[in-house]
Amino acid sequence: MPTPHILVVDDEQDIRELISDILIDEGYEVSTAGTAEQANQQYIDTRLDLVLLDIWMPDADGISVLQDWQKTQPLLCPVVMMSGHGTVETAVQATRLGAFDFIEKPIALAKLLATVKKTLEQAALEPAANSQQQGINTPIAEPQGKSPVRQALRRQMRQLAEHPHHYCIVGAAGTQKNLIAGWIHQHSSLHDQPFIQYEEASQLEKLIKHNKLAGCLVLDAQYLPDASQQNRLAQYLKETSGQPLRVVLLSEIPPRALLDDELLSEPLFFALSAAVLTLPSLSQHIEDVPDMLRYYTELLPDSENLPYRHMSLAGQNCLRQYAWPGNEQELVNLIRQLLLLGNEGEITRAEVEQVLASQQVAGEQRTDGNIFDQPLRQAREQFEREYLIYHLQQADGSVGAMAEQVGMERTHLYRKLRGLGLDPKQVTRAD
Image 1 (tube, rainbow, N blue to C red):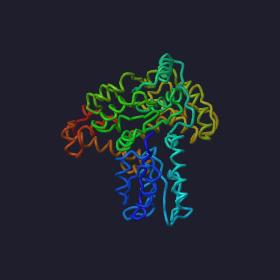
Image 2 (cartoon, rainbow, N blue to C red; image 1 turned 45 degrees about the vertical axis):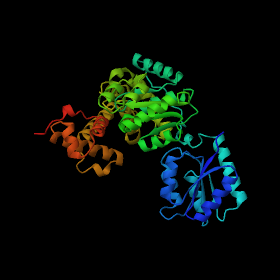
Image 3 (tube, rainbow, N blue to C red; image 1 turned 30 degrees about the horizontal axis):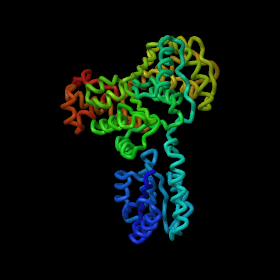
Image 4 (spheres, rainbow, N blue to C red; image 1 turned 90 degrees about the vertical axis):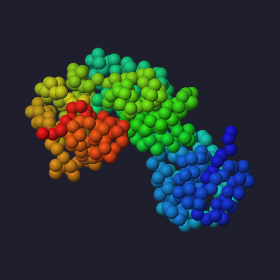
């Protein structure tokens, strides 16, 4: 068993050296840092088993440092806070942020060694304790519907759950790719491991460097890291093929198209594209709409405490004739609106038509005047879409010229356009 490596972070050199000497005498490997900047660098670059982190430092307080580290879930190693000005409130805040324990100064030798020993033993017994914070706590239901399309989908999901290889899920927006990946994970041999989703490449790089990846790692094609980091991940998967780790790529376009557009590196493409699960749009199995309506009109009242309302046959027939551009997620949102804001009693065809008409009008509206009334993410996406459409029109559909106009690297610009469903070939200069 390798010798545990402990990082001691304290702004007072005498205290750093004293704690370091004590721990070295006990057989531990020790590094030290006197500032938050030095601590951050060691935390990223060194494989650590424990950090003793002081609350007060010249360039940043320890709570802020811990908050920054906590952005990467899970923490790369246990953290024990230290302070000569400790209070109950500070201790509570530190533990809420993920600190394992809190030691007050002056530090008693027995207390220090007992805390270090307990922390390392607990971390060895529960290596994925922090990772479980990102697990799936609620059971996910299978996709609803009796059509051959849905039956084939459920069969393929069970096959992927049985064989824990890396794979891709390809489907248009609203096909609930993330829920499908979650169901497969819950029914796989890795179900007791974390289900982790990352949008920041820097977080992924830290976990690879410290060999902390385990369970199911979900990558979204809209947030893929750059080519060098993708290659590093592909190499990591090759080197750790025996570990309990599965990577899933969610995308609106096939992985081959991502490769052709230079959004997916070749090594990662070959690592993830052996199995591709394609989710059909709702318009391709419209006969399943009645089953899905019944399921969600019963599920949402229980899960979200909404009033129960039965969907009339006329209302169901109306929705069977709808195109569903937003796929299953649009159906869920429509039912939620009917239950939350609709009338009492049975859901009528007239009420369904009214909601569909209001959605169509809302979809045709631009951001002028109402962007501030929307949730931040929706407002940002709406602004980005219109901003990019404007500059595509100015560049007459040329992504290269547009990249120079907006100051973006072309690969990232292609990724953003794909994520927003914009095809440069379909956008030309406005009249």
